[in-house]
Image 1 (cartoon, rainbow, N blue to C red):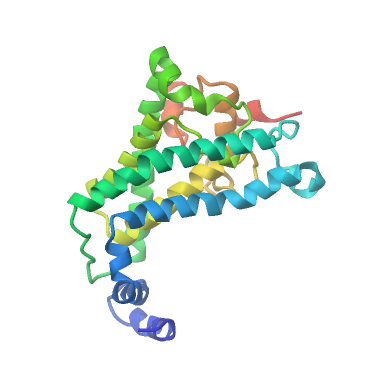
Image 2: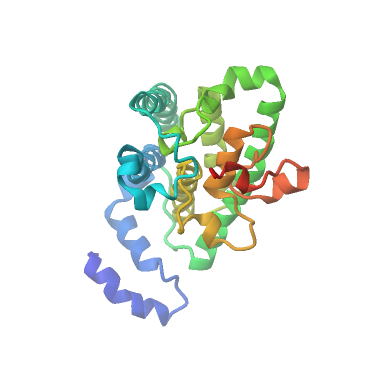
Length: 276
């Protein structure tokens, strides 16, 4: 099946009870099955997505005040990341992935059989519902984890303090984490789709979306297309909320949404992060 066949069959798919994603799923399943079934595929997908999604924000950081049209969206415009900061975060990220993530993936590859690929694709509703469900579940898990690591000094100093080296977040600081935190995040990201019995396509989409919103939360820019501006009623935090957390660490523990912080009294207004 070629890409031309995929687009030619989309209209036919609309006329049946099959998912609109079925032609796309058939194409990748039939032409790239060995790649998709490898336990290394999710790791490569998330790592590649992370660095690709960081690039636009990295360019904005490098250009700085030379791009006034972009810099006006900088939450803390007087605090731009230096070259040393960018290199440090890149080094920590690569170190963690080389020494922790990839060895774990290789070990998993050795004992875990290849992932079977289902013939049926998820519907758009199943895809959207699965991604949203995974984000909400992760939000709850990380809220508890994050709260405890700020309240218990040994946990904070031993595992989480490295992420708070910078009071003004930037994209490459997203995965500037201690090894334990990265392993924990990876564990939940892998386990949650299994718990929710998600289709593999939904699982991979969640992984990419989760990388995107995590990078956006740390980017340091409050652009008009940020998720917090697109999702109404203030239910989503976004970069301004997380920027507040890096300035006022005992607030805004949830990574994405706002409801847990509001329920537990740890919510801080976004205006705290604005530079007047």
